[in-house]
Amino acid sequence: MRIGNCSGFYGDRLSAMREMLEGGPLDVLTGDYLAELTMLILGRDTMKDASTGYAKTFVRQLEDCLGLALENGVRIVSNAGGLNPAGLADRVREIAKGLGLDVAVAHVEGDDVRPLGLFEGALTANAYLGGFGIAAALRAGADVVVTGRVTDASLVVGPAVAHHGWTPTSYDELAGAVVAGHVLECGTQATGGNFSGFRTLRHDGTPLGFPLAEIAADGSSVITKHGGTGGAVTVDTVTAQLLYEIQSTRYLNPDVTTHLDTITLSQAGPDRVAVTGVRGEAPPERLKVGVNVLGGFRNTAEFVLTGLDIEAKADWVREQLTPSLRAAEVSWTLTALPQPDADTEEGASCLLRCTVKDGSPDPVGRAFTGPAVELALASYPGFTMTAPPAAGSPYGVYRAEYVDRADVTHTVVHADGRRELIADPPAFAEADHDHGLRPSPYPAPTDVVTRRMPLGTFVHARSGDKGGDANLGLWVAHDDSDAYDDRVTWLQKLITASKIRELVPEAADLEVEVYVLSNLGAVNVLIRGLLGEGVAASTRFDPQAKGLGEWVRSRLVHMQEGLA
Image (cartoon, rainbow, N blue to C red):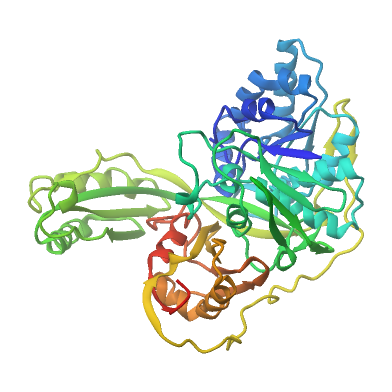
């Protein structure tokens, strides 16, 4: 079966649904709209209007494309329901009625666990559900299935289960579908988006195509895209997405535990990557819950510092402003100092950023912006700010929790109103999170002659966030070099916890875990706590660690002669 994707986040390319429906044959089209931050945004929406809580862009796409999907025989599965899948299902029915279409709409619910009362002050608390509810809806004839917080991969697992007839103990097949789902979930990140090897791609202005997976009955798949679309599907672009936001070599999903160290990727043709060999075992007994709470209020002021004596100017602003600040948390950051004798004013400037956070809005409002503005004529020469002062804004804090499956009622509401409870898996496994940890010392030959070069000379990277933790995947490029195997050995020897702390000084006092994925020529690094309380609360320059990988690739390392 052919499963495509048309959204990797809330705000992705609006035209993608039509592009995928018109671009070639599909059986199912999925759309992933949810992330930890998105759930917080939707939660704040529901505080203003309880009838909201779903992705409104999905509604706009269906208004344009629902008839086309039905005409082409393509079924649509999306987590755009967010916090209100029932409300979105009703809205889809309204759209269908307005278009004169007969559409069977089902939804999956039960992920909202706030009624359990386990998470005090939770704005949102949603258990990550698996794909068997989606499968049940499709088997019952649904044309459109909308869900709340299922795992991103479940959007693909569910249709594959329905099509191939897998059971809850088809672990290898389910694991293969999880891998395919993980590759598809972030849309064009699998076809060259956010890819450190972007210079190898064809650049002619054509928008990157969205990915699709051809999933076989044994769980293997081929990742590809519609012909004529931009970007590329290569072993490296697929690896980039595989290493995105994972942790250990055991990838936990509600339906199966996927062994990431069993994946084999191979180029099966132009823009076709085969995914084979994936093994799985029983899923974990408890379900992960994404919890968002209102953490307080924040505000930021940015001061532009130009020319000479940059550091002295920054010191003076801090000295002047600090006594007036009443917020519970104050952080200062200074961007890179400008080069001497810059030939533009912007090139001779940098930013001093002051961020304040407090449980009350008052210390981050006028009490903060007033003293900052009052310095305009009384501080360093050339005083200016990047923007007028703004009011403080609320921020959320994300954390992962876990609940017993018995506390979660994974439920499908079919198109005819019938409710079906999805049974728990018949068996569970205790995941070994230490599996795949890099051994120390690493069994590898001693380096001979070395020279200093950027790590990214032949190493790709992809990074991202999981709550307050940063994930960093590093792998050797598939560039047809005869030194590929030696490069992999060198990379896996080089990347230790201590080396990461050297390359990322912010991690000097943090817990760092390094996992080896030899089948992918890769290591995966988890830096715990680098992002503080998560993207919505972080005051870090790159709160989602999106650029972390590119920074690390730019760092100089001792590289053995003959590898580059």
